Length: 270
Ligand code: SAM
Image (tube, rainbow, N blue to C red; front, top):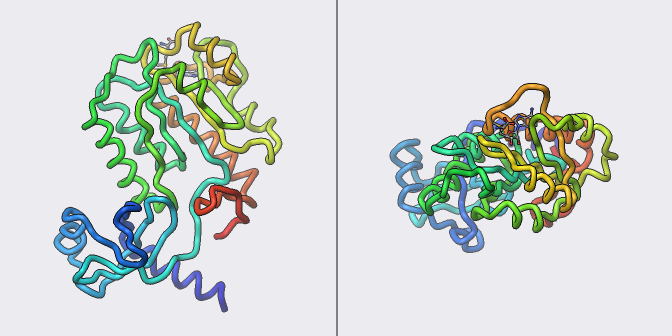
């Protein structure tokens, strides 16, 4: 009975629009909408008072929400969880131009938990505040589109040495081409399920990492890994490595999931 109810709710919700509502927009069950959200729901989607959408809480979780003259009302939390069992932190050397837009979009679709833009020795991009705002907007759109349960965090850009020395993940890899290193997949498959925890993966900019950066990463507990014999573009390397981690995590570790409410682990909910 409960299962039938939940699956009906999930089918119903799959027809509804997901919209990210930041923490500061929630006042208990009352939601204040921004002018842009109000315009989107009412003019683009043509919703009226009483119509429903799925409010994706900026901190995690889905709520069935009803449009209301004062904004929206969160009616009830929805079941389900689309998050990966392991949290993934991407430390990405920023490629030049707009290439990082694709990294944040696709990494979000694949399930990344945090994206750290890294200023490395060979990074050419100096991102402006506008660029950072743009990446955070892209992450929200991608989280809504891919029905994420949590909106990933895009950190402020940091230097390579800060990124690796402050990384608190249990498992840490740095992708480097031409290093005769073991493959990322072989390393992931050798981990015991309970030993994977949060996984950090570092991928370099167009010019790659310097030897000194690789040595610093190793000293900070990172393992050097290969993504194959071919040289991948910076964007491809970031996406390929997250795909591999997500696939292994979901295949071998699907009975436990990160509970975004508590930050701890919970039994699989779907
Ligand atoms: N200029 C570098 C070279 O020729 O060796 C290649 C840099 S590559 C375009 C950008 C980043 O993608 C690298 O720093 C690395 O993190 C990652 N990458 C690309 N191909 C890789 C491979 N086959 N194995 C591991 N990492 C790779």
